Length: 109
Image (cartoon, rainbow, N blue to C red; front, side, top):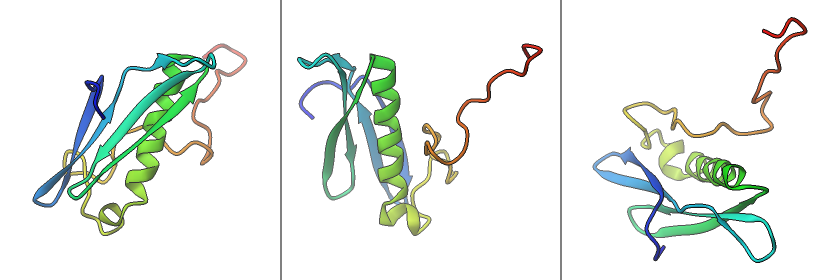
């Protein structure tokens, strides 16, 4: 990832670190917003991007993608990948596994 990261999070994996980096979402030529991301593993770098209708959605989808990649990793499955000593990586949850947002009831609360 040649551009400077917009935000990043560092995870522990035993005596090594795993870093998730996100670039600032930008408007792509096709009209969608793209948010490039990278996971810096101990032995390689994985880079991709997510698209959204606006920059917020692109960033959220990039975070969701990174969350999924981290949870599918051998390090996470072996219980060796944590964030602040917890297995909850504190990234947007896996969408599709229940309701992400709860709408207010009819009384507005």
